[in-house]
Image 1 (cartoon, rainbow, N blue to C red):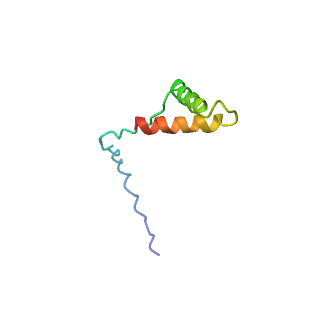
Image 2: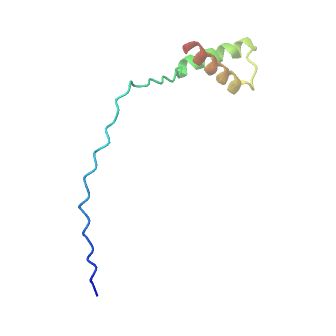
Image 3: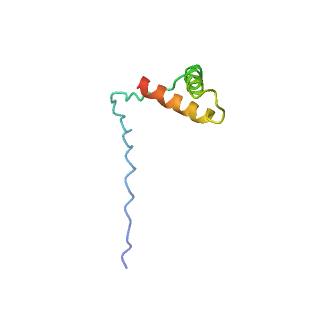
Length: 72
């Protein structure tokens, strides 16, 4: 019987390193007003309401949102 001789595989070729494409940097700018700015505006809302308690969180969030909209 004839013997079957298997051929050895060629060594693997080194892969080329993936080149990173340089693209223009994307600038995402998040606008965050300072704590003091938010505090001042929230206090103004509190004064407009006649210094009634129970709305501090609403005043704060409203002031924060308004300042972010003005800045962007």
